[in-house]
Length: 377
Image 1 (cartoon, helix red, strand yellow):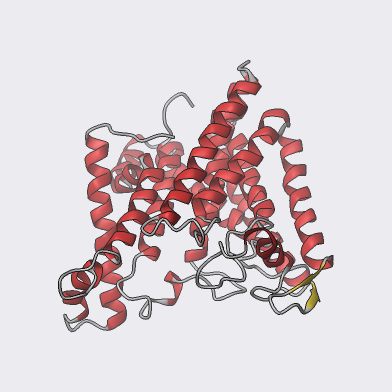
Image 2 (cartoon, rainbow, N blue to C red):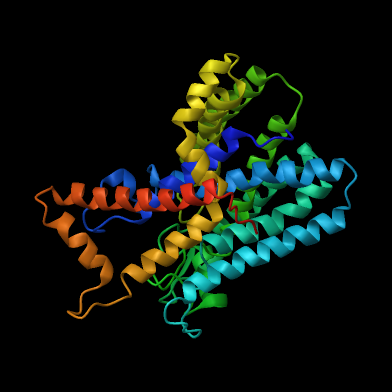
Protein backbone atom coordinates (compact mmCIF):
# COMPACT_ATOMS: atom_id res chain seq x y z
CA UNK A 1 0.00 0.00 0.00
CA UNK A 2 3.03 2.30 0.29
CA UNK A 3 3.32 2.52 -3.49
CA UNK A 4 0.63 4.04 -5.67
CA UNK A 5 -1.90 1.54 -6.88
CA UNK A 6 -2.12 1.59 -10.65
CA UNK A 7 -5.65 0.24 -10.44
CA UNK A 8 -6.92 3.17 -8.37
CA UNK A 9 -5.26 5.70 -10.68
CA UNK A 10 -6.64 3.88 -13.75
CA UNK A 11 -10.12 3.77 -12.22
CA UNK A 12 -9.94 7.49 -11.50
CA UNK A 13 -8.61 8.08 -15.01
CA UNK A 14 -11.48 6.07 -16.50
CA UNK A 15 -13.94 8.31 -14.66
CA UNK A 16 -12.29 11.56 -15.80
CA UNK A 17 -11.96 10.37 -19.42
CA UNK A 18 -15.62 9.36 -19.43
CA UNK A 19 -16.58 12.74 -17.97
CA UNK A 20 -14.62 14.58 -20.68
CA UNK A 21 -16.32 12.47 -23.35
CA UNK A 22 -19.90 12.94 -22.20
CA UNK A 23 -19.54 16.64 -21.31
CA UNK A 24 -18.14 17.88 -24.61
CA UNK A 25 -20.12 16.84 -27.70
CA UNK A 26 -19.96 19.09 -30.71
CA UNK A 27 -23.73 19.46 -30.78
CA UNK A 28 -25.99 18.66 -27.81
CA UNK A 29 -28.82 18.03 -30.25
CA UNK A 30 -26.92 15.12 -31.80
CA UNK A 31 -25.61 12.77 -29.13
CA UNK A 32 -25.78 8.99 -28.80
CA UNK A 33 -28.22 8.07 -26.03
CA UNK A 34 -25.67 6.37 -23.72
CA UNK A 35 -23.66 9.61 -23.70
CA UNK A 36 -26.58 11.54 -22.21
CA UNK A 37 -27.99 11.34 -18.70
CA UNK A 38 -31.26 9.50 -18.32
CA UNK A 39 -34.05 12.04 -18.74
CA UNK A 40 -35.35 11.28 -15.23
CA UNK A 41 -35.76 7.75 -13.84
CA UNK A 42 -33.34 5.08 -15.02
CA UNK A 43 -29.66 5.31 -15.91
CA UNK A 44 -27.21 5.33 -18.80
CA UNK A 45 -23.43 5.01 -19.10
CA UNK A 46 -23.20 8.76 -18.42
CA UNK A 47 -24.85 8.25 -15.04
CA UNK A 48 -21.85 6.15 -14.00
CA UNK A 49 -19.44 9.07 -14.06
CA UNK A 50 -20.30 11.25 -11.07
CA UNK A 51 -20.97 8.45 -8.55
CA UNK A 52 -17.72 6.79 -9.63
CA UNK A 53 -15.87 9.97 -8.62
CA UNK A 54 -17.64 9.98 -5.26
CA UNK A 55 -16.94 6.26 -4.74
CA UNK A 56 -13.26 6.71 -5.61
CA UNK A 57 -13.04 9.59 -3.16
CA UNK A 58 -14.32 7.22 -0.48
CA UNK A 59 -11.74 4.57 -1.35
CA UNK A 60 -8.98 7.16 -1.15
CA UNK A 61 -10.26 8.34 2.24
CA UNK A 62 -9.69 4.87 3.67
CA UNK A 63 -6.02 5.15 2.79
CA UNK A 64 -5.52 8.85 3.54
CA UNK A 65 -7.59 9.07 6.74
CA UNK A 66 -8.58 5.73 8.28
CA UNK A 67 -5.16 4.08 8.03
CA UNK A 68 -3.35 7.19 9.24
CA UNK A 69 -5.72 7.54 12.18
CA UNK A 70 -5.20 3.87 13.06
CA UNK A 71 -1.46 4.51 12.86
CA UNK A 72 -1.67 7.12 15.61
CA UNK A 73 -2.02 10.36 13.65
CA UNK A 74 -3.93 13.15 15.37
CA UNK A 75 -7.57 12.80 14.26
CA UNK A 76 -8.38 16.44 14.88
CA UNK A 77 -5.53 17.55 12.62
CA UNK A 78 -6.53 15.05 9.95
CA UNK A 79 -10.09 16.38 10.06
CA UNK A 80 -8.86 19.97 9.84
CA UNK A 81 -6.65 19.17 6.83
CA UNK A 82 -9.51 17.34 5.11
CA UNK A 83 -11.92 20.21 5.81
CA UNK A 84 -9.49 22.68 4.26
CA UNK A 85 -9.19 20.50 1.17
CA UNK A 86 -12.96 20.12 0.92
CA UNK A 87 -13.50 23.88 1.20
CA UNK A 88 -10.92 24.53 -1.52
CA UNK A 89 -12.73 22.08 -3.82
CA UNK A 90 -16.04 23.82 -3.08
CA UNK A 91 -14.39 27.18 -3.77
CA UNK A 92 -13.06 25.99 -7.14
CA UNK A 93 -16.54 24.78 -8.07
CA UNK A 94 -18.09 28.14 -7.17
CA UNK A 95 -15.40 29.98 -9.13
CA UNK A 96 -16.09 27.88 -12.22
CA UNK A 97 -19.79 28.70 -11.89
CA UNK A 98 -18.99 32.41 -11.68
CA UNK A 99 -16.96 32.39 -14.90
CA UNK A 100 -17.38 34.22 -17.24
CA UNK A 101 -19.95 36.78 -16.00
CA UNK A 102 -19.07 36.87 -12.28
CA UNK A 103 -22.70 37.66 -11.54
CA UNK A 104 -23.10 36.94 -7.84
CA UNK A 105 -26.86 37.62 -8.00
CA UNK A 106 -27.58 34.63 -10.23
CA UNK A 107 -24.53 32.36 -9.81
CA UNK A 108 -25.42 28.70 -9.42
CA UNK A 109 -24.41 27.64 -5.92
CA UNK A 110 -24.61 23.81 -6.25
CA UNK A 111 -22.35 21.91 -8.61
CA UNK A 112 -20.25 18.78 -9.11
CA UNK A 113 -17.19 20.01 -7.21
CA UNK A 114 -19.39 21.52 -4.52
CA UNK A 115 -21.00 18.12 -3.96
CA UNK A 116 -17.65 16.36 -3.91
CA UNK A 117 -16.40 18.84 -1.32
CA UNK A 118 -19.52 18.54 0.83
CA UNK A 119 -19.40 14.74 0.71
CA UNK A 120 -15.78 14.77 1.82
CA UNK A 121 -16.53 17.27 4.58
CA UNK A 122 -19.42 15.19 5.94
CA UNK A 123 -17.81 11.78 5.49
CA UNK A 124 -14.45 12.63 7.07
CA UNK A 125 -15.53 12.59 10.76
CA UNK A 126 -17.44 9.34 10.19
CA UNK A 127 -14.36 7.72 8.69
CA UNK A 128 -12.09 9.03 11.46
CA UNK A 129 -14.22 8.09 14.47
CA UNK A 130 -16.19 5.07 13.25
CA UNK A 131 -15.02 1.64 12.22
CA UNK A 132 -16.29 -0.31 9.25
CA UNK A 133 -19.54 -1.20 11.03
CA UNK A 134 -20.14 2.43 11.97
CA UNK A 135 -19.46 3.57 8.41
CA UNK A 136 -22.00 1.04 7.10
CA UNK A 137 -24.60 2.14 9.65
CA UNK A 138 -24.10 5.79 8.74
CA UNK A 139 -24.45 4.97 5.03
CA UNK A 140 -27.75 3.21 5.62
CA UNK A 141 -28.94 5.81 8.13
CA UNK A 142 -28.37 8.74 5.78
CA UNK A 143 -30.33 6.99 3.04
CA UNK A 144 -33.12 6.22 5.49
CA UNK A 145 -33.34 9.88 6.57
CA UNK A 146 -33.37 10.98 2.94
CA UNK A 147 -36.09 8.47 2.03
CA UNK A 148 -38.27 9.49 4.97
CA UNK A 149 -38.06 13.17 4.01
CA UNK A 150 -38.69 12.52 0.32
CA UNK A 151 -41.64 10.18 0.82
CA UNK A 152 -43.33 11.58 3.94
CA UNK A 153 -42.82 15.35 4.07
CA UNK A 154 -45.61 17.46 2.46
CA UNK A 155 -43.98 20.20 0.37
CA UNK A 156 -45.24 22.79 -2.14
CA UNK A 157 -43.99 22.80 -5.71
CA UNK A 158 -43.04 25.97 -7.59
CA UNK A 159 -46.75 26.75 -8.18
CA UNK A 160 -47.59 26.33 -4.50
CA UNK A 161 -49.40 22.99 -4.87
CA UNK A 162 -48.58 20.69 -1.95
CA UNK A 163 -47.44 17.12 -2.67
CA UNK A 164 -46.29 14.18 -0.57
CA UNK A 165 -43.72 11.82 -2.04
CA UNK A 166 -44.11 13.09 -5.60
CA UNK A 167 -40.80 12.36 -7.35
CA UNK A 168 -41.22 14.57 -10.40
CA UNK A 169 -38.85 17.34 -11.55
CA UNK A 170 -39.15 20.32 -9.23
CA UNK A 171 -41.89 18.74 -7.12
CA UNK A 172 -39.95 16.63 -4.62
CA UNK A 173 -38.85 17.63 -1.13
CA UNK A 174 -35.27 18.25 -2.27
CA UNK A 175 -36.40 20.76 -4.89
CA UNK A 176 -38.53 22.55 -2.29
CA UNK A 177 -35.55 22.80 0.08
CA UNK A 178 -33.31 24.14 -2.69
CA UNK A 179 -35.84 26.80 -3.65
CA UNK A 180 -36.25 27.73 0.00
CA UNK A 181 -32.52 28.22 0.58
CA UNK A 182 -31.06 28.96 -2.87
CA UNK A 183 -33.86 30.36 -5.04
CA UNK A 184 -32.34 32.15 -8.03
CA UNK A 185 -29.06 30.26 -7.66
CA UNK A 186 -30.07 26.87 -9.06
CA UNK A 187 -29.36 24.99 -12.29
CA UNK A 188 -30.12 27.38 -15.14
CA UNK A 189 -31.87 24.79 -17.31
CA UNK A 190 -34.39 23.99 -14.56
CA UNK A 191 -34.48 27.03 -12.24
CA UNK A 192 -36.86 25.30 -9.79
CA UNK A 193 -34.58 22.38 -8.84
CA UNK A 194 -30.94 21.33 -9.00
CA UNK A 195 -29.40 17.90 -9.71
CA UNK A 196 -26.72 18.62 -7.10
CA UNK A 197 -29.13 19.96 -4.49
CA UNK A 198 -28.74 19.90 -0.71
CA UNK A 199 -31.05 17.05 0.31
CA UNK A 200 -29.64 14.57 -2.19
CA UNK A 201 -26.19 15.25 -0.75
CA UNK A 202 -27.16 12.88 2.08
CA UNK A 203 -27.35 9.74 -0.10
CA UNK A 204 -24.34 11.04 -2.05
CA UNK A 205 -22.40 10.85 1.24
CA UNK A 206 -23.65 7.26 1.48
CA UNK A 207 -22.08 6.63 -1.95
CA UNK A 208 -18.79 7.92 -0.58
CA UNK A 209 -19.09 5.77 2.54
CA UNK A 210 -19.68 2.68 0.40
CA UNK A 211 -16.44 3.61 -1.33
CA UNK A 212 -14.81 3.76 2.11
CA UNK A 213 -16.02 0.21 2.80
CA UNK A 214 -14.51 -0.91 -0.52
CA UNK A 215 -11.32 0.84 0.56
CA UNK A 216 -11.21 -1.23 3.76
CA UNK A 217 -10.98 -4.31 1.58
CA UNK A 218 -8.20 -2.68 -0.42
CA UNK A 219 -6.24 -1.83 2.74
CA UNK A 220 -6.72 -5.27 4.29
CA UNK A 221 -4.14 -8.05 4.36
CA UNK A 222 -6.27 -10.39 2.28
CA UNK A 223 -4.79 -12.07 -0.76
CA UNK A 224 -5.27 -10.13 -4.04
CA UNK A 225 -7.56 -12.78 -5.50
CA UNK A 226 -9.68 -12.72 -2.35
CA UNK A 227 -9.95 -8.92 -2.52
CA UNK A 228 -10.99 -9.08 -6.16
CA UNK A 229 -13.67 -11.66 -5.43
CA UNK A 230 -14.91 -9.57 -2.47
CA UNK A 231 -15.55 -6.61 -4.78
CA UNK A 232 -17.20 -8.81 -7.40
CA UNK A 233 -19.58 -10.33 -4.86
CA UNK A 234 -20.26 -6.97 -3.20
CA UNK A 235 -20.87 -5.42 -6.60
CA UNK A 236 -23.37 -8.07 -7.64
CA UNK A 237 -25.16 -7.86 -4.27
CA UNK A 238 -25.28 -4.06 -4.52
CA UNK A 239 -26.71 -4.21 -8.04
CA UNK A 240 -29.39 -6.62 -6.84
CA UNK A 241 -30.24 -4.38 -3.89
CA UNK A 242 -30.44 -1.39 -6.22
CA UNK A 243 -33.00 -3.20 -8.35
CA UNK A 244 -35.03 -4.18 -5.28
CA UNK A 245 -35.09 -0.58 -4.03
CA UNK A 246 -35.93 0.61 -7.55
CA UNK A 247 -39.04 -1.59 -7.48
CA UNK A 248 -40.11 -1.13 -3.85
CA UNK A 249 -38.87 2.25 -2.58
CA UNK A 250 -37.83 4.87 -5.14
CA UNK A 251 -36.68 4.45 -8.75
CA UNK A 252 -33.06 4.70 -9.80
CA UNK A 253 -32.63 8.42 -10.42
CA UNK A 254 -29.36 10.34 -10.71
CA UNK A 255 -30.88 13.81 -10.25
CA UNK A 256 -32.54 12.71 -7.00
CA UNK A 257 -29.60 10.42 -6.08
CA UNK A 258 -32.05 7.89 -4.70
CA UNK A 259 -30.91 4.92 -2.54
CA UNK A 260 -31.56 2.63 -5.51
CA UNK A 261 -29.15 4.78 -7.52
CA UNK A 262 -26.59 4.68 -4.68
CA UNK A 263 -26.51 0.89 -4.60
CA UNK A 264 -26.74 0.40 -8.37
CA UNK A 265 -23.82 2.73 -9.06
CA UNK A 266 -21.77 1.39 -6.14
CA UNK A 267 -22.32 -2.08 -7.58
CA UNK A 268 -20.99 -1.06 -10.96
CA UNK A 269 -18.09 0.79 -9.32
CA UNK A 270 -17.09 -2.35 -7.40
CA UNK A 271 -17.20 -4.47 -10.54
CA UNK A 272 -15.27 -1.99 -12.70
CA UNK A 273 -12.62 -1.46 -10.03
CA UNK A 274 -12.29 -5.22 -9.53
CA UNK A 275 -11.38 -5.53 -13.22
CA UNK A 276 -8.75 -2.78 -12.98
CA UNK A 277 -7.33 -4.21 -9.75
CA UNK A 278 -7.06 -7.73 -11.12
CA UNK A 279 -5.42 -6.63 -14.37
CA UNK A 280 -2.98 -4.09 -12.90
CA UNK A 281 -2.21 -5.11 -9.33
CA UNK A 282 -3.44 -8.61 -8.56
CA UNK A 283 -2.94 -10.91 -11.54
CA UNK A 284 -0.24 -13.40 -10.57
CA UNK A 285 1.56 -13.29 -13.95
CA UNK A 286 3.99 -10.29 -14.01
CA UNK A 287 4.13 -10.19 -17.81
CA UNK A 288 0.34 -10.07 -18.04
CA UNK A 289 0.26 -7.21 -15.51
CA UNK A 290 2.94 -5.37 -17.49
CA UNK A 291 0.95 -5.70 -20.71
CA UNK A 292 -2.20 -4.45 -19.00
CA UNK A 293 -0.24 -1.54 -17.54
CA UNK A 294 0.95 -0.51 -21.01
CA UNK A 295 -2.54 -0.82 -22.47
CA UNK A 296 -4.20 1.16 -19.65
CA UNK A 297 -1.40 3.68 -19.18
CA UNK A 298 -3.44 6.56 -20.69
CA UNK A 299 -6.04 6.08 -17.95
CA UNK A 300 -3.31 6.17 -15.29
CA UNK A 301 -2.03 9.43 -16.80
CA UNK A 302 -5.54 10.90 -16.64
CA UNK A 303 -5.97 9.70 -13.07
CA UNK A 304 -2.82 11.36 -11.75
CA UNK A 305 -4.28 14.87 -12.29
CA UNK A 306 -8.01 14.18 -12.29
CA UNK A 307 -9.19 17.19 -10.28
CA UNK A 308 -7.03 19.62 -12.28
CA UNK A 309 -8.26 18.18 -15.59
CA UNK A 310 -11.87 18.38 -14.45
CA UNK A 311 -11.50 22.08 -13.61
CA UNK A 312 -9.45 22.85 -16.73
CA UNK A 313 -11.88 21.10 -19.06
CA UNK A 314 -14.80 22.99 -17.56
CA UNK A 315 -12.98 26.29 -18.00
CA UNK A 316 -11.96 25.49 -21.58
CA UNK A 317 -15.49 24.41 -22.52
CA UNK A 318 -16.90 27.68 -21.18
CA UNK A 319 -14.31 29.78 -22.97
CA UNK A 320 -14.91 28.02 -26.29
CA UNK A 321 -18.50 29.26 -26.36
CA UNK A 322 -17.89 32.60 -24.61
CA UNK A 323 -15.14 33.94 -26.85
CA UNK A 324 -16.71 35.54 -29.92
CA UNK A 325 -14.87 36.06 -33.20
CA UNK A 326 -15.20 39.01 -35.56
CA UNK A 327 -18.08 37.42 -37.49
CA UNK A 328 -20.03 36.95 -34.24
CA UNK A 329 -19.60 33.19 -34.10
CA UNK A 330 -18.21 31.55 -30.99
CA UNK A 331 -14.72 30.06 -31.04
CA UNK A 332 -16.15 26.65 -30.24
CA UNK A 333 -18.70 26.84 -33.05
CA UNK A 334 -16.00 27.86 -35.51
CA UNK A 335 -13.74 24.97 -34.50
CA UNK A 336 -16.62 22.52 -34.77
CA UNK A 337 -17.79 23.76 -38.20
CA UNK A 338 -15.34 21.63 -40.27
CA UNK A 339 -16.52 18.47 -38.50
CA UNK A 340 -20.18 19.45 -38.82
CA UNK A 341 -19.73 20.07 -42.58
CA UNK A 342 -17.47 17.06 -43.21
CA UNK A 343 -20.26 14.82 -44.48
CA UNK A 344 -20.33 12.66 -41.38
CA UNK A 345 -23.69 11.89 -39.83
CA UNK A 346 -24.42 14.68 -37.34
CA UNK A 347 -24.28 12.32 -34.36
CA UNK A 348 -20.87 10.99 -35.48
CA UNK A 349 -19.48 14.48 -36.07
CA UNK A 350 -20.61 15.42 -32.58
CA UNK A 351 -18.96 12.30 -31.11
CA UNK A 352 -15.74 12.98 -33.02
CA UNK A 353 -15.62 16.45 -31.50
CA UNK A 354 -15.92 14.90 -28.02
CA UNK A 355 -13.16 12.40 -28.79
CA UNK A 356 -10.85 15.14 -30.04
CA UNK A 357 -11.54 17.12 -26.87
CA UNK A 358 -10.53 14.07 -24.82
CA UNK A 359 -7.32 13.74 -26.86
CA UNK A 360 -6.41 17.39 -26.30
CA UNK A 361 -6.94 16.99 -22.56
CA UNK A 362 -4.87 13.80 -22.67
CA UNK A 363 -2.01 15.67 -24.35
CA UNK A 364 -2.04 18.14 -21.45
CA UNK A 365 -2.26 15.30 -18.91
CA UNK A 366 0.61 13.44 -20.61
CA UNK A 367 2.83 16.54 -20.61
CA UNK A 368 2.14 17.09 -16.91
CA UNK A 369 2.86 13.42 -16.22
CA UNK A 370 6.19 13.56 -18.10
CA UNK A 371 7.17 16.74 -16.23
CA UNK A 372 6.05 15.23 -12.90
CA UNK A 373 3.57 18.06 -12.39
CA UNK A 374 0.91 16.70 -10.11
CA UNK A 375 -1.65 19.21 -8.86
CA UNK A 376 -3.01 18.34 -5.43
CA UNK A 377 -5.48 20.19 -3.24
